[in-house]
Length: 90
Image (cartoon, rainbow, N blue to C red):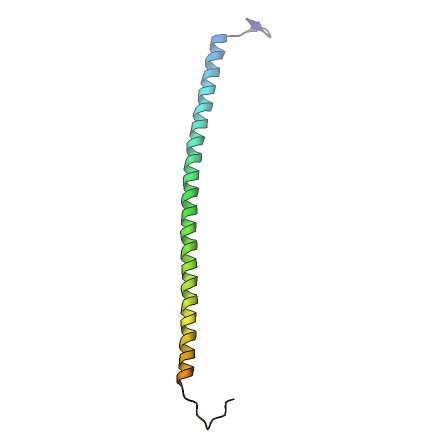
């Protein structure tokens, strides 16, 4: 077969096309593996972020509880003290 003044080698062209197709498939498979690893890494990051958020929330709740306990202690101390009648209130 002749085209544009040169002979086409159908067998060689087919071989090259098969090689290129195999290369594309290999690249696709590699990209799929990389995507799977990236998604797994993203899932791990999200899980770590959820754990961190839970830890922060627990710390904030503990701080609020401590603040409430300090307030109750101050109120109990204030109620327990006896007022000196000779001193003005203000």
